[in-house]
Amino acid sequence: MGEENKKVVLKVFRTNYNKNESSHYDEFEVPVNRWTTVLDALLHVKSYSDTSVGIRYSCRMASCGSCGMKINGRPSLACYTKISELNKDVIVCEPLSNFPRIRDLVTDFSQFFDHHKKIEPFIHNDLVPLDIKDKDDLVEFEQSPKEVDDYLQFSYCIKCGLCYSACPTVATDPSFPGPQALSQTYRYIADNRDNDKSTRFNILDERHGIWRCHFAGSCSAVCPKGVDPALGIQLLKGHMMGFSKNDKKVANLRAKNKE
Image (cartoon, rainbow, N blue to C red):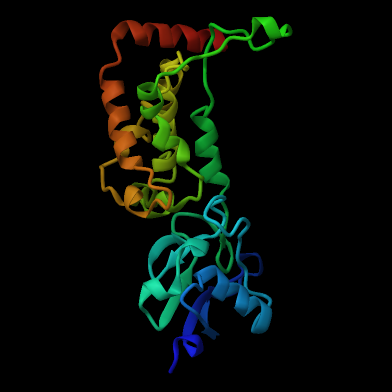
């Protein structure tokens, strides 16, 4: 059989939690080429076999992170995974673990984004007013290449949720922020434009916080953008261990002022 006539079986997890449907797998035979991705195969199924298959996707170029799912048991982006590279005749597509399921391959990211928002993912700098009205009062923050390198790789995160799905701690403790939120915390802690480490340290230094991470490393293994969340978490722990008593007094004072 020539390469242009090759076919694989796509085994897709099916359920609809809004209708209390029991879960099962449907199988579809799909023609593939060397360049066919898992997302291409799923869209072929929707076009020619079953329009009701539930999937989420957008950019189709591994930039938005929308098409995350488990492919042959591994959290992956469907648009980034070529079927020819899997070397399997049966491709199993399942929804991401550690996320509430909605329908078929679509999961609910509400809790994931709540964890992300909780760490306040923006630059804190109380030395510069936010209500600048005159452009002459604008301040430029100059950074050296070394200062940019300190946080650059962590800024590549696309919030696809693959690391969250692969994390064994998230699987047992939904209140744990997860590798995405923790590594993004380090992204801002390492940025020299941010001058308020204490706020985020207070958020993470609790029973369900950063200390629940046991450094399994599975988060870094599945990241499609080359980010190393496990490294960011360990570096963040080091920063927190070096947080002085005086810093903590300032942190508590700021917390009281916000109240």
